[in-house]
Image 1: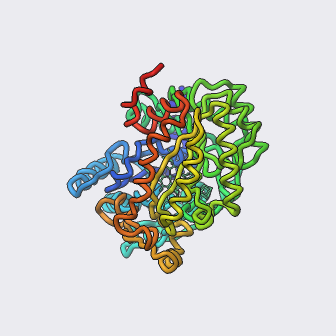
Image 2: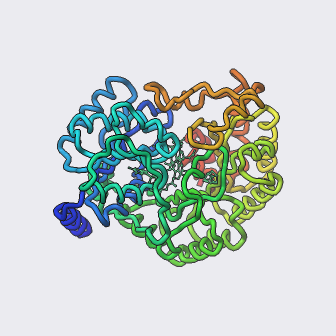
Image 3: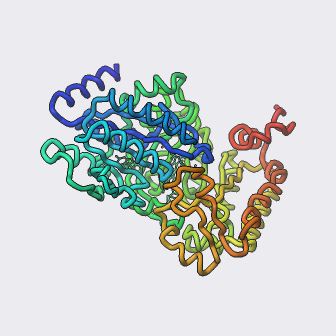
Length: 489
Ligand code: B12
Ligand code: SF4
């Protein structure tokens, strides 16, 4: 029923003369190392949901429908399939979501195929990479008509509205989109992806990713979120809960993850949201990433009524690294609060995960030892619900650190060996982590963090409560499934 009304509306918009938009994720080439799961791109859907009020919009994701090539021959096969798809599609504007930098080479290839087929159609590109590096899309042949910086809704709407009168601009235009205001928020229009999900997720979506708010007031060195509008905007708590249930019921989901850049910044909003969620009694898991500084006893008591996993970007436990990462102003207070919140969560049986970034430029053996001293202290406790997760620093453009590389090179002897890796047609993951954080951790010593992390494997298992251990083994550490504790009741 949904789909019929959506399809009818889309047809009416098309016949009214409004241009039609093909909003496509171009895929990611040579990105196998990331091991990214093939998620439904819900932020792309949110953009489509806004535009669909005014234009006929088709959603495409070539990574899922065609693939993510890792060799020259796979790229050629991919191009043939994209050509066929575009040749059979009916659209006026190709809007490419070059979301992370991983999609840069794919975005160029898809745009070129489109331009060869259709010299007069408009090609627009937006997402995190165009926001970070808009000049990467200024090419001699003016392949792209518009490069959008920031949240795409307002700019794309304006461009589409002007298309019938202005046509293609004579040169590529870089446009900074106006802030997407709270009152413009529209919910996820799942009808837009009905055909797509039926074809590619016939058994439903076990995990669904939703965005309930936008904007983050922090300015972490390694994150490019600060390039977007920093004001915090959200659906009402009531609408947020509705959106979660709509999605979970429609796709029979086991888990709903809230992917906001800065979940629950407003305490009033957060508490009302948790209260309403508890009242609604979800039977699905809720996964939330937030800052530990936000949670207090009241939040935690509310959370203890639902199946939840809370993730924190703790990033490091070295005071010096936390300052370099611009994660907080007072590292001692930050770390002390983390221990307190983690204890409260464990006391209430709530699963939580601390994400760590190792080898951020400036990391040394001393800073690693500080981080592991803090972890070791937490690991002396038992019956915990705290899971530790590690990742190596990846050098992405757009963040403050990227523009400040010289400081790290001079002060610490940091090396960034991958160059503009997103332009390379070879292992991009390897190139993005090909860094040395400091002269102290150069060469083979750059792997020291990993050795130190693995050494704690047994202690990390032993600190967990049985239920938390099983959860961690099932979700994050497949090797742990061989441990006899995994099979105990
Ligand atoms: C949630 C999230 C994820 C989720 C995505 C879930 C999902 N299904 O959507 C998961 C966990 C899967 C993920 C994975 C990764 N992520 Co991530 N992620 C984020 C995060 C936290 C939030 C994004 C967000 O706020 N979206 C909200 C929606 C509404 O906005 P949006 O996505 O930005 O879309 C808007 C604009 O970008 C623009 N736009 C987008 N497409 C288009 C297209 C057109 C035509 C136009 C005009 C505009 C436009 O308009 C949209 C609507 O306003 C950001 C930022 C952060 N704080 O860390 C990082 C971030 C995007 N991730 C990043 C990275 C690096 C990754 C990974 C590589 C990490 C990894 N090691 O695996 C993978 C790559 C996945 C992939 N296939 O590309 C980087 C990208 C940096 C860069 N320069 O590319 C970010 C910016 C974090 C950082 N380090 O700065 N991520
Ligand atoms: S890492 Fe998180 S808290 Fe820091 S700037 Fe990015 S979104 Fe905000």
